[in-house]
Image (cartoon, rainbow, N blue to C red; front, side, top):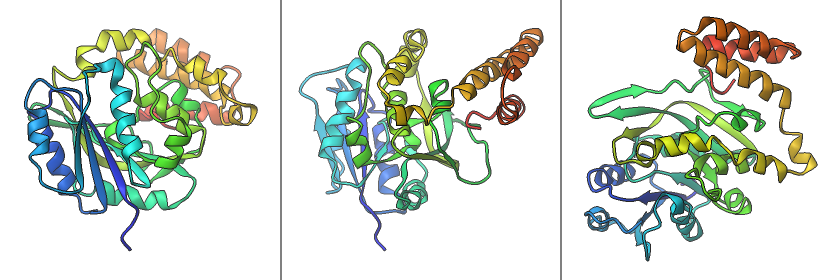
Length: 301
């Protein structure tokens, strides 16, 4: 069976040192039914030239008419989304790259019609050093049936994401709240109320750390924004959608995450107080999840 077409969305800017490796990792996929739409944000370097040098009909390269910067990142994503011919959409920014079996691993999970988004682990690359991320909580794929955890944490790295295109379009495309630099987390929130999310506990890609990436150049600004759009997201939910949110879990897990952060910083007294707070007036299940967060470094219990 050939399998559904996957559209790979690749926004890029000043990635001349990386875009070749990005494209080569797509060309090397063991799953061949894909197209890649590269949207260049008017890079002043050779990014566009390198991208256009690949002679493969599955690769389309577009340059935006003017530079939009990090505040206009959603324009790059949505430009590609509206040109996408695939049933599924995957994200791969121009400075990252994938494992060879990334698409082949994820596509089968999307044959379940209720899965709107899947993601996995990855390696983080600093120079020549690779470090495996620890976002997993299970040795086998596990569905995340509600949106509660995403309201306080986002550990879904965009380069590992595959999503249902119809659901993305129904959600209004990629959402970048006005005044923020976030596109990924707001969009995952919208998708999380439309169906199931599933985590695949294996590395699917390589996330590159370098001084010129948005998350490094604008780290302080992104930190100060602190998911300010979450309350807006909640205010737009209808009654049925609100039922997908376990507010007790949010309260207890938020305290548990703060306790874990305190433990990692050797602030043991504060850790204890926060854990007591997370246990107070919560169900047995929530207590178990809090312990799992603290003891197992789990971000998606």
